[in-house]
Length: 246
Image (cartoon, rainbow, N blue to C red; front, side, top):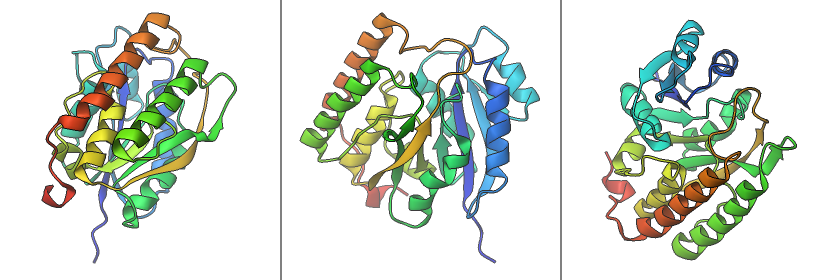
């Protein structure tokens, strides 16, 4: 009997009390019909919320991971570490902007042996009006130019919807603990020789609560600066080659 790879779905969440229950329900329904994997669990990483995000997520059936020190990358990494039995990791945000029924799009290339890191592109897919702000779209264009110039990787979106083997992620030696995490993952993957692929995905507007970045000019500037530093700085870091990652 062939043993199916185990999948952990990781959702970093900060003050998402109004979204998290509906998201967990959507993920649970979509996970029930996933083919080719065994779902290990839905891990909601509560990243220092001041509302009832953790309690609501637990009541909805998620495995709650407590990461009180704030930082998007820190929350993602804590989820990856907590999912100790998983072979595959799939990340999505807690604001319900991603569509869980599209998970097979991200998993299929990895299961077929065609890619090692798969990122959902909202630019290549479809985004509801207002789901992607002008700063986000321009930031994606600048990042795309930089990734191709430095790493020869064609990128259209630094979206949060992504899938990767757990051993590959942990082998990359990720250091970025803030909003530069998605960029660092792509940059270090390129340095390691991992195969990168984008797939088109949908993007919905936030249903409840306020955005942590796009609605705040200061946060937009700081995030953009952080991403710029991560993309440039990752060029010189030592990263194990894919063949050396167990």
